[in-house]
Image (tube, rainbow, N blue to C red; front, side, top):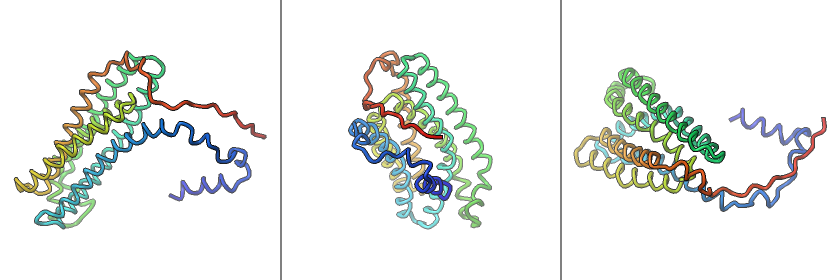
Length: 263
C-alpha cells in the first residue's frame, strides 16, 4: 500500500508534475455511457463468479460442523485465488490481443491467438492441478496445525485440482469474449452457470446427499464446467471475419492537445 501511496503523494507535492494537471474538465465524462455499457457487464462477469464462491462459505455455516466446514472452504477459496492469478493474467492478455487484432482488421491473427491461449490455459491448468494433488497431504499445514483440518483439506485437494483445470480454461475464454466486446453475453453466461446450475447443485450435493463441504465444492465445479462449455461454444462459433466488420460499442476518442514540458 505504501509503495502506491508514496508516488501519488510525490506527484501532488512536487512542482515538477504540476504542468501535467490542467484541471477537471467535462471532457473526462465524454461518452461515459459508452464506457459504462462495457464496464458494467465486465464487472458483472467477475462479481457473479466471486459472489458464488463467497456464498459457499456462508452456506457452510448451515452444515453440521460449521466451524470446520467454514475453515476448510475458506482455505480452499484462498488456494484457488492463489492458483487462478496466472490464468487471470492470460485472460487479460488475450482480451487485449484479440481486441487489437480485430481492430487492426486481422481476423486470422485473432483466431490464432485464441487457439494458442486455449492450449496455454489447458497446459497451465493441468500443471497446477497435478501440483495440487502432489502436495495435498502437506498443504493444509500452511494454514493450520489441526490434523482434522489438514486431513479434510487433503481430501478436498483433488476436487480443487479439477476445478482449477476448468477455471484456467474459463479464464482465458472469458478474456476472448471480452476482447470481442461480448461482455453482456459473458455476464448472462456467468449468471446462468453459477446461479441456475452451480449453487442449486451445491445445495443438492451438500444437504440432500449429505456430502458436506465437498458437496458444496462439487456444485461449484458443475457451475464452472457449464460456464466453460458455454464460453467455449461461443468462441468456437465466432465468425472472426464478421467480428472485424462489426461496429464495436466503443466511445469516441477526442484527441487533447499535448502539453509541452520544459527541461
